[in-house]
Length: 299
Image (cartoon, rainbow, N blue to C red):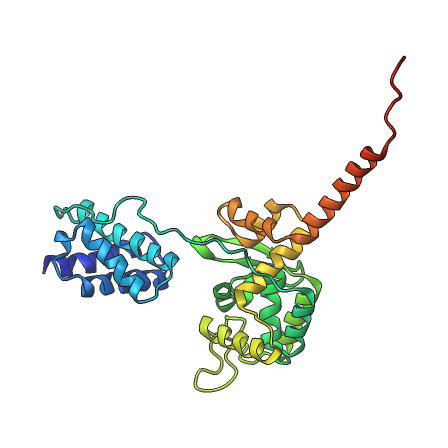
């Protein structure tokens, strides 16, 4: 009974720390899965038991990054039990226990792939949604939550309220994204709805389109165009294009809402155009110096 109450209190604890409803639900779901798997009381779990749990997650074909996230959440829960609920136990998840995770390069679309993808999007709502991802670097959740009050068409900017990590930021609207958004707003019905992008058919018509709804539209267009595209890949494309256009990396960091510049610096590894220009410019200088005649030796 004490542990049941502790889990309920843990939910309140997460809410007091201003975790989003989605995050709270995700945390509790992971804790629930762990408790169901565990064949001993929570307070009796050992380091060895966590090792068995990692093996179990591996057997479910879970990726290392996801397993690491599970371990972090379980460790947070045990720390809560120990320090907030005052339950005597040893945290079985060791500090810095992590599986090695491969670090693939961010994948962006080429110009011809962007053109082919947007060439099959005829719906004005969908065209505007994905243009905002491509040109403003908005995450799919940010597009889903976007409200009319956050858009300033006159100044061509959007205030992203409560983005990832609860941060607000300002992004700017390119000319083509502006045209796409304006064209959609002209035909948008249900003017009383605050959300910008609305469901257009079915029982939920007039309500804000969900994250999954947006992702399903992207999956449809990716299949139709034959392009390996995703919502997040549009965001990667924006970052790579800006870097290739010689935008400062700090500017890209602010636009994308990255906490750490090291996250943004990943795009330097795929910004081939800039690397290519710098390489050949430097190499020309090297070659010019190497072909200059050397001075004759003095007699």
